[in-house]
Length: 113
Image (cartoon, rainbow, N blue to C red):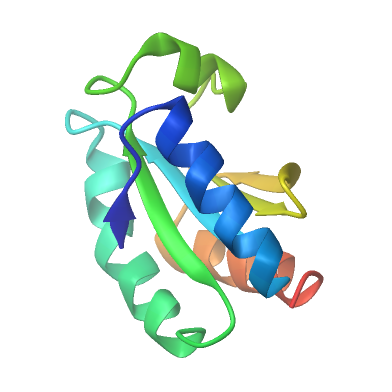
């Protein structure tokens, strides 16, 4: 999973994904968030399953400009979003059990691949 550093970087990623007609997944997280830390390796495993169809990214909300965080409309962590065709499509807010979150994320991705 590659990090997204600012809004310009997100624009570049969205533009590239749009050219490929592929969705992207963004994990909005924070280094202090225990559930985020626990979830990340499970998301990385999921990313490997979709390697050729979906690119996975993460944003550490404390290490990026707040304009990027506002763009994602993030209020809770972890929030996992699918973006396609240059825009936000759907999200899972993952404050519950990691395996349930992963199942919900998988279902969400299936709608857009």
